[in-house]
Image (cartoon, rainbow, N blue to C red; front, side, top):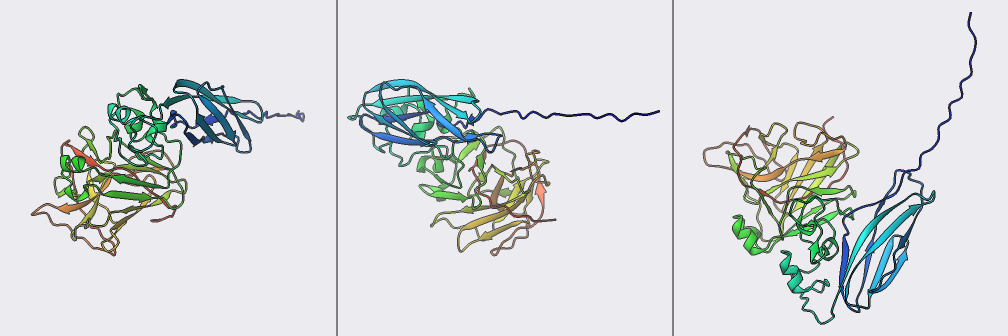
Length: 361
């Protein structure tokens, strides 16, 4: 004997709080100046609209236009303002924003609002224009927070303004690394003194740098280095992640004029087994001084197991004497072979660009 039962299931929608993406830790400017910053909101409820409020400032005037905030400084001093973002259902989240207003008379070589003394105390270059020492898209003066007590969100002793790999407040699609002469000399990269290497993302996926850095880059990372004992890397090694929701990505590196890519260069990548291998899905164009990589999520080279994220340390390499490597060129070139080596100081020049595109079926 059986009976028919009717079961009613009700699913109640859950409203998620919006989150203010971190990266902008504060504003530093001079008395009489104005600054604008853009806040990026993440919200699982994609249809939500958002509004902003902020506590009253005693140092200047604050105005909001959608997610754009402008601040005009009138008084010298420092304070902390609380920015709140709310969605249409009333759920909200907050962010503390440090404000520092310096005297209009301070020495400020690059006009970023930080005094030259404040910049030097924190290891920043006071003369660098559009200063963004870690190349994450957030200016030093916004990422620093309080110049006297600079932000170090992960507590590792490296301030956010110098640390590569922290979440940025803006999704950069083009990045440039300018290599100061002292850094290039110390790391044995004389060809890159004063030069800029750019990495571009044509489809707007997020670019993520790895390892802790220093002003100007490249990075010297002795603990994570794996030696390629068959090759040397005259232009350094790049360590980066790319968001690739479609499972693949195109990354393009552009080297500056005056820097010749070695005629016998091949592309070497560190695979998931900590082996350096020739990478066959790359194009070296000597005429335009570019390196283009076609990357696939979760293949034998992807060192990030997460779906939708590709991490691939890579560099232009030249075979050491007595090592045979087949190379083709630019049009595009690479061959096979690999080796494992001991830990040593790797030069890590960081960051990527991507264009979503499927390869290798």
